[in-house]
Length: 332
Image 1 (spheres, rainbow, N blue to C red):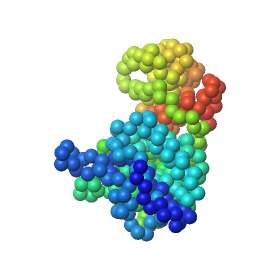
Image 2 (image 1 turned 135 degrees about the vertical axis):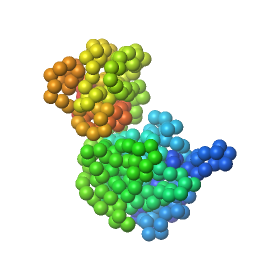
Image 3 (image 1 turned 30 degrees about the horizontal axis):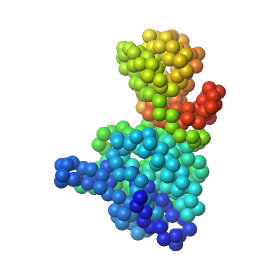
Image 4 (image 1 turned 90 degrees about the vertical axis):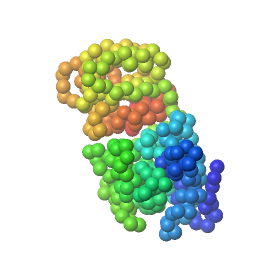
């Protein structure tokens, strides 16, 4: 593990945890493409001198598409240790953008305390014209050091925008402005060396006992059969998140399969495949909110499918009973 800037001179510093991703990539002659190369030392040496005292270490150096649940767990555990340090005022994690929002939400919902938990990345490699990695990292450090960011929990900082981990999502494959919070917008901005706060994100923390890995995510499309749901239940999953149509609706032929799956002890969470909006409707026909509520499904509220999966994995690992699952789910 690489550690730099640990002189102990300052009573409080910003900890940077590097994990790879495009922000750490450069063109590689051997492969003919960009691969992770930059580490903690490279990032620290490239940042402006007017930033707060920094502590930096490298946990892994991988594309986030290569992350396993164990990788994400290690990130969470290391961040939790760093925020307990009295000399650390906030934590910044550099991360690949593919799964950044899931890690951000995991930190937000499981790492207690009021110290800022900031994730950042880049959409261009360090070999590309217009590489924005160092600028994003500098902005993230400024947010982590800002007194007004305390109590925010997990936030994502890219393109000078600050987004709440609960609502942010990656919306574009290439744009530097890829992270947006549909229907909510950013909670603040970084303008020069100033952190401007527009709104304070809501935060609720769950108890942490790890991640239950046996949780699946299914997305509904027009006319899709329910055989994938049936197969998931037969493979011994403990939970399934269904991204339903519109406000979380399912076709009528899915209803008996959901009922059979839940009878096997599998928890079913209903999210929406829409990029924004709560899971709810006023309809009386089969497959709407009322039907699914009567079946005992849980609802993702404003979470997208991938974050609802993270929440369900945390909830199932922390719960000792069915009543615990319901209470924990509704508490956060």
